[in-house]
Image (cartoon, rainbow, N blue to C red; front, top):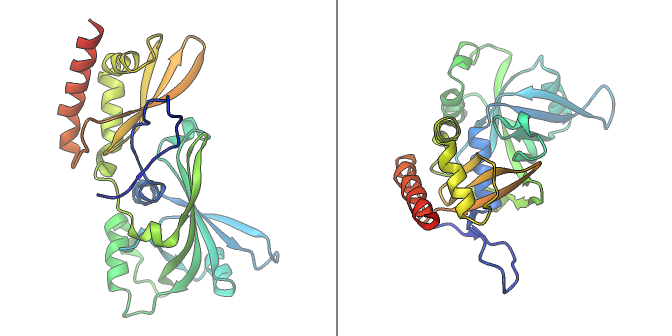
Amino acid sequence: MSQHATPMTNDTDPPEPPEPTYAERARTLMHIAPVATFCTTSQKHADWPFGSIVTYGLDNQGNPTFLISTMAMHTKNISADPRASVFVMQPGGENDPLGAARLTVMGKISKVPKGQDAEIRAQYLARHPKAAYWADFGDFSFYLMDTIDVYYVGGFGSMGWVTAEEYALATVDPLADAGTGIIEHLNADHKDALLILARASGQPDTDEATLTAIDRLGFHLRLKIKDRYTGMRLGFPQELKSPEDARPVFVNMVKQAREASS
């Protein structure tokens, strides 16, 4: 089992619910984010950052890979200066951008020689199958970022650097691919259950509770209490191994919360 993040607390405070490490959350966010902002150093305006949008793949260590054309400005930029970064945001985070998880991966980019790109090609096309139509165009090639450092922001007050080694060794959360569907389902069909959980967990005056994130160790709720908003995290009674584990655990948690409040 991977190491969990353990926030500092006072001796009188109840223990914080366990959370994945920043490294695990970074690998998970890179796995689920659909596109990235690609930042390179402009060759037209020396030393100025140049931003663009790219799709990306991931190798086995979580290093971003790219299928890009020699005609693209960012490709021209990295041919002269390989230093670059990619920035991704939690899908759906546009509704609350400062509260959403986001991530910057910094590294140096190199072109993968033809004939040595089979694994990177397969991994990239598994994420972006439509790219197979232009993957063999003469001006397109695969590129790989050698990750140097990672900076993760989980929302207000949750941020920190992740070393390249920590990032490479971390794993994607087992709920990653199903997380969005679970969140949408619970928010659409079980808002009353989320409200019960929030009220039974120390926020009895909660008017609305919205699920914002979920992982194998627990979940985050955004609470509306009168005219203000706040957040809370609740831990699962046991670590979830797959998305199928989520429903019975939620049902049992809500049952126990109802019994405790009756």
